Image 1 (spheres, one colour):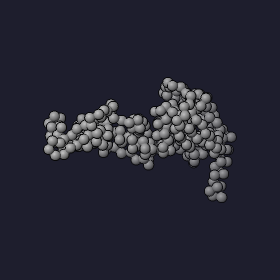
Image 2 (cartoon, helix red, strand yellow; image 1 turned 90 degrees about the vertical axis):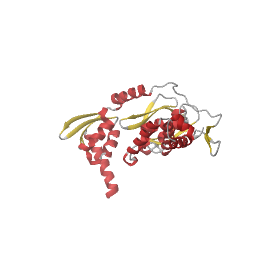
Image 3 (cartoon, rainbow, N blue to C red; image 1 turned 135 degrees about the vertical axis):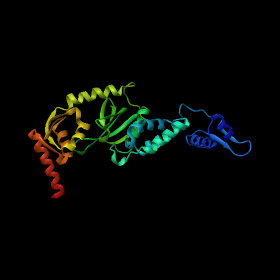
Image 4 (spheres, rainbow, N blue to C red; image 1 turned 45 degrees about the vertical axis):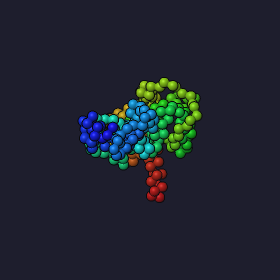
Length: 295
């Protein structure tokens, strides 16, 4: 069909037809354009499309990118843009203009957003789509590296952080912070694991177990007011505000070692009031660190 015939049939301008044909071609639709007398637009005779023409990588990227935003790695972002382009190409002109207008009016600064290491979410999402095995190198105690293999089951954002839900080889499902993964690699070797898995139900049970059992070491701290939003985001289920002026909170940790690591990261914004053993070990480690830089 010629551009003029399409414009008349669709009740749009010829300029719109030209733009739509270009968008279809960019989205991977095999539109054939022949110029001159007897020419026009046609589709490849044997071409068929699925619902939206999205590839597996694009579907994965769209799912991750809609949630991760700037935390997604460049490959995910690239596939997300292609997927959105394909979806937009199928919209009516008025709706497409609305999408384009909103894209121009929304901006996210990646530098102001925290997230897991580049590439981790894309690799995990690809393993989830498989499903396939996943090989992890995790941060262990005292700087050690722990290598494990299992089955990726889901991704969860909890307390403002990404968590990988997975089943280690021969073990029950568990959740680990993506930020604690030093290396992530999808592997084709089959691994045992549950075929049907409810990520939401698992996470609620895991979170409750963490609150009830894993966080049994309680500390009392005086904290700066600007630290409170971070504490609420990361440790709300483990925190109780004792007083507002001065701001004193009670926090539950898995152990004295976990408590020390967390509190040292807050610098002078937090002071341990109780227990005395935690106060002393935090002070000792702070002095050691200061000696390295000022000795």
